[in-house]
Length: 462
Ligand SMILES: Nc1nc2c(ncn2[C@@H]2O[C@H](COP(=O)(O)OP(=O)(O)OP(=O)(O)O)[C@@H](O)[C@H]2O)c(=O)[nH]1
Ligand SMILES: [Mg+2]
Image (cartoon, rainbow, N blue to C red; front, side, top):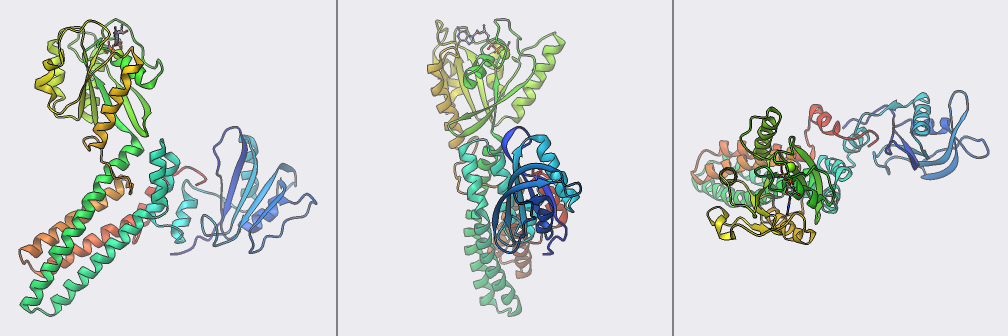
């Protein structure tokens, strides 16, 4: 692919107050730009050649010569840098204004302001990493838990790309076999080829299925398990949210209808991020505001991956409770019987018609020692695959999963066709299409629009 011709610069660290901040410059002019804006303590400009260097000195305004800050110049000549281009990093003090001025100096010395993700895009275009690895960089930056960051790191090292390349190699061999057979249309040769398509194709399908399972887990690690806390008013939904968060986030009162709006908070439960959504108690109401809240609760319910149905164990179940229990039947859910510290009005058996393999957890939101049992049940739901799958060896994002799904369909079609002895042409076309879809995962034959879409999700300076 074509190497970029201009030189880009951006602040690579977060804007705020910090000990150190970094302005990164990458491209063919990085060395010259650094020589213009950096001075050794002696006042001399550094001489940057093809050896890596780390120099102490001062950053100056390339025009007036004013000193902007003292710091360190890190020189990483191509190809041994993040972008595989010449890279100069100016490590200065981490103040917003200082960094802006240092960045400005590099721009005036000839660099262009980088777009979000442009450094990583160059790394991809220069063959330093495949597209799946580049995407893992942003996953790593955004990871909210240890588990998510570990998985992202693994993908950044190329695990997914290796698997895709291996799969494509096998697809290509299969395709070659089919193509050759098309040219020699003897019947038994054709049958042999079809048998091979069925055998190899089925193996590939099994692998793809496993990968697609892990895609769901990948999404969970990135976005959290969308968990709706629902129930009729006053059963203790907000109290439960607060208890899981271990802080008073939601307003709790003994007045039914306290929560009017949907409230979202992330909590990390043993490495898995949950997006907890507290909702307005569902009931028929004349109050306009509350009614909108109830409407939203129903929307949240529709999108939830996991539902905590909260009931009040100290009172008989009402019609509203029964209705919510019926409504959430199809969801991955946990029945939470709250207020266990009060005298209980009914036994667990009362929920038998709804329970099935749904866990019932009787607890009090007011007793912290009760919560581990609920957490246990929530994690159990995720690992059992109802709200996510377990294989973490490969993280995939929605784009990658979509392409895998396409490849899966094509291969399934080829296998099906081979089974019924359809013409080999059709099989060849399906295999070719699967090969192309898988290629897009690692960025082979990826168009400019796709790259733009992916890299625009990055932060500035990466
Ligand atoms: N005794 C006891 N009281 C509780 C418990 N959990 C919540 N409560 C009380 O029940 C009342 C309602 O609690 P909330 O958490 O506001 O209930 P909610 O389901 O969010 O109610 P809405 O927002 O109105 O739908 C408050 O007075 C809480 O203090 C519990 O485990 N035991
Ligand atoms: Mg509430």
